Length: 358
Image 1 (tube, rainbow, N blue to C red):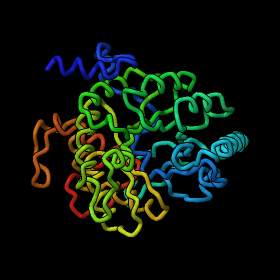
Image 2 (tube, rainbow, N blue to C red):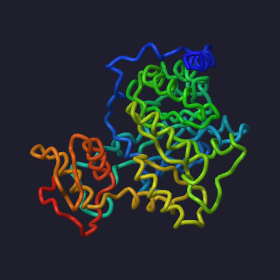
Image 3 (cartoon, rainbow, N blue to C red):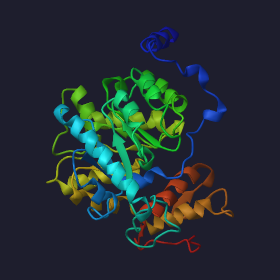
């Protein structure tokens, strides 16, 4: 077994090895201002578009949770220079009107309605094509207005390059590496990568994005039209990625659902996304935004259970709604339910027992 692990480590001998750097202080991912549930429905927008500022200030798509300005797959090679020029124009426009919109913030208190009110603007990320482009973006005027960056195709083979590219970014900007290469099918690689993520960057890793379509491509497949992703090999991999990265403190986002004529199937997949603790989902069309937000809305009875678990006077084990609740083992789940309710609000499911709602 040790020979196998040595062989796996040798695969990454052109990158820094992080395995020897595990310490207690790195047991959890660095905390930051926003909670990953604020990603909600995320829309990729090619940087060539000229209406991104209208989306940021909510003149368009007023309910979107987050946007990702794409300089990678959504922009053809011939349009890269145009995309970069329009991104610079966007940043200058934003700087000139920075006082007219505030940073997205967590809501003060829970909203007992189907959907919480949206922050003044969505979270805004940029997806560069490669580490070299990210280094270029770090020098752009007003780049600190951006909440963070989505880094495509990150694995142990590219991690050191992304690490170097992030050295000139603000320590407050959020990173979202995308898991979408063939290397992710190797569990030994993923354990090394989880450790590497905690050591490689000065910036917080906001979430890890599961790149479903690229992962399908590595298997010479396309997502089938009549089944949810969890009934495919990529669904099996998603479970493995959760088991690897979540215990290290990371949050993961759900793969995109690209079929607009299958709303029932989309909702079935969203239900599984939420149940697995995935914190957001990429949308390809505005019609999907409300469905994502509906799926992430917290039933009042679920919130009541969470608050009962988190109550300072909760018993070690107690019954609620014919269910055994045990704060010692359910506290992490309960905390995330409260975090989700703060972002998406609650819905009355008519099955509430706990009266001391916070």
